Length: 639
Ligand SMILES: Nc1ncnc2c1ncn2[C@@H]1O[C@H](COP(=O)(O)OP(=O)(O)OP(=O)(O)O)[C@@H](O)[C@H]1O
Figure 1 (cartoon, rainbow, N blue to C red):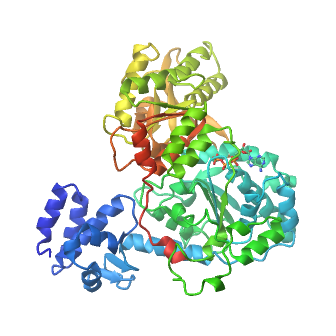
Figure 2 (figure 1 turned 30 degrees about the vertical axis):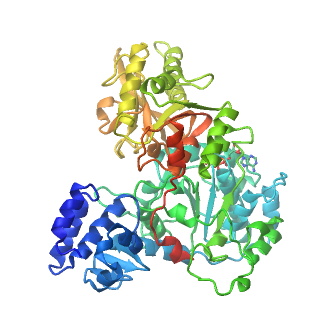
Figure 3 (figure 1 turned 90 degrees about the vertical axis):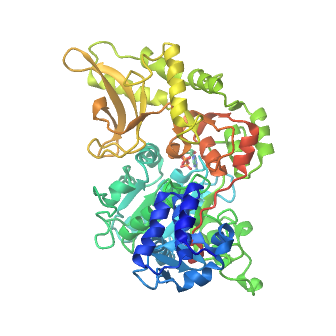
């Protein structure tokens, strides 16, 4: 029995089980209610800590496990004034629902997201032309089921759909064909063109989708008028919703909704719960939402794993027999193997148990692409990603021996620096990028176009290689690796300095800079260019999007960049939404909570052509076995 929460809080703080913010929250409850049960304060401090780890709520079972001496939390939380039961008392800061303890803000966002998705799960009348349009857009390629075609059909029939799939499985291709289909049908049936918007959670991800979408639209087999009605511009979610300085609220919300009929959001694994709630809030009731993303990637930095929750049942499909029959009718595809038997044969099951429930309404709106076009059977990267996802370390290690695009090395500082600078075999390191800058330098007197071309090439050469780390801090973190690599480059005469500004220094923004139009995560490279007065000046070149979705180079004076870091090394978290020809991932030799299956999978799948792992095999095994589970009640609300 805990009589004095103060002692408990101080001890837990000293032991590192909570931090000062968690303790402050527990103390705040006492200010709110001087008679608060100390056990409620303990629960609140632990909940606050869980939220910091990305969970949306804390199951009471977790609390029972962590603090058995508290007794049954259902008893003391069930009677506390500061805890609302299922959201009842709107002034209570905590909410208890379905055995899950929430802070009110998270409970509200979760309930909002679930309600908004549920509102969109109804089917819409399918056009009579759906079957013929699908057949035209997805010619038979010999793969069956053609999941792209199935995904397109599923997304076409309702106001909400998720298309998940690993790298190169055709998410972009499918969504472009979906937009072609929807616009064709809209123009044909009623003549009114759909207002379509495309967005991604970060500037980097938006830029990448932007680059691939224009090409895909050009290849689309549709009427030129339809093609013109598909936007190529991809914006960030923040910009779409209209972020305002100094407030979490956006310009667009339920009162002032977006002017949009179809919203597509890519890289949806990076969307946290709060952002998803804001997006759904701003979406007018009749508008469609299509989420694209890889469910196996790392979740958002902030709390929640919305895409992961929505796709938790995607592997098995869980289609109903009605969905199966409809897919057969409109797609000529057979998804029987991913269909649940009719519910009548499962009488007696516990309906709210997410693991056993058959064919829920949500399942009918999720499509998983299962065939990578980028990583065929001859690709080690694809095979490695699959082995990691299965948590099969033996297979993962065997894959390194079997494929030339993969290499496994030790995580010693010297080995990492050498790989990062020299690369291996054909796979580049940073020498390649720095040599490129030198070799392709425009002649004296070169015009703006030549300088922009050079800068664009330098950014592309930089993306030829990236070293990824699990953490920022520590001997194996980003900061230490950056310093070592800079020293190695300096020792080889490839850069002029190891600190301050110098040519070749790659930097990453650590905060959005609205004045410069640059976003957190944007990467620039430092180059000497003419200063316009007969001299030379260091400028940082960034690729930015113009209003029409095109890419252009912006040279920025280094002193204007308030929040940047050198980026020879980058955390895996920061690398989400980016890809590099050669990606190297280094893992620290000691076990650590940050080492998870999703972290390694995300690192591996950043590689387009070559992947190098610098880690001890035991640590790979440790990480691959640790699948992240973020506590949330979202799936349960939706089933
Ligand atoms: N049905 C298809 N027919 C022909 N080529 C395809 C098809 N689907 C995908 N591709 C090609 O495969 C590659 C990967 O497709 P796409 O970019 O659509 O995948 P993705 O899942 O969006 O990839 P990522 O998000 O990892 O970049 C592209 O070059 C694309 O042109």
